[in-house]
Length: 216
Image (cartoon, rainbow, N blue to C red; front, side, top):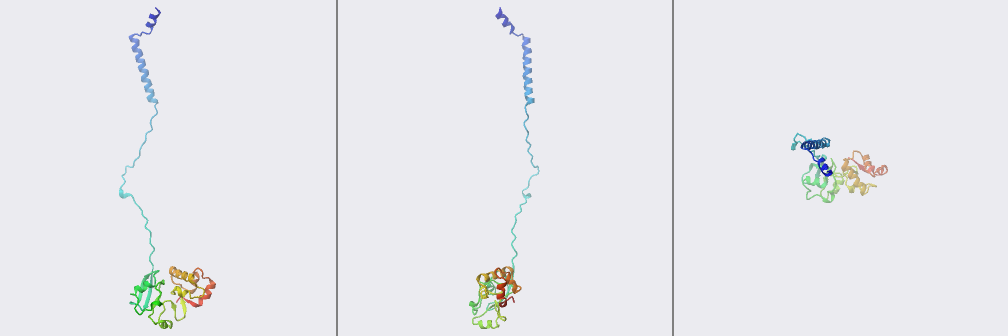
C-alpha cells in the first residue's frame, strides 16, 4: 500500500506537466536574458584615417647643398724672359709656375736658377724673369726684381720668397713659412709693422728686422 502511494505522489497529471514545463522554460529564458544583459560590452576600436589622399609630389624633401666659398683671384704682372709678358689673372694660392705657364712659359734664354717656381704669389706683385747673365743688371736696378726692392736694398715682405725671408736677422725656416702663410691667408702687408701679427714675431724681433724690410 505504501509503495503504491509513493508512486501515485510523483505521478503528474497532464495539466501539471504542462504547467511545470512552461515554468521551466520561462526560467531558462529569464536566465539567458539576464546573462545577455549583464554581459560586459566589448570595447570598440575606431580607426581614424585621413580621407585626404597623399600625393607623391606633396612631400617636400629639403636637401642642404653645401655652399662653396667664393673663389678669390689675384692679378700678377709678369715680364722678362717669358713668351708673353703682361698682366695675368690667377687664383689665390697659385705659385710662380702658374704665372709662368699663363705667360706661355720661359724663353730658352731665361735663367732658371734665379726663378723659384714653387713660390706662392701675392696679389699686385710684379714678376721679372731674368735672362742668363743678367744678375748684375738686376742688382743694379736695370731689371725689376720679383722679390726685393733693389733701390732700397730691403726685402719686400709682400713678394719675398722663403729663402730671402730667411736672410733676415732672427727669421728662420719656421718664421719664414709663417710669414708666407699669413701673406697667403690675409693678403699683402699694408705696413711693415703688420708683420708683428705673424705668430712668433714680437717687438724685439721686429726691432731687429724693421730697417731691412719694406712693403713697397
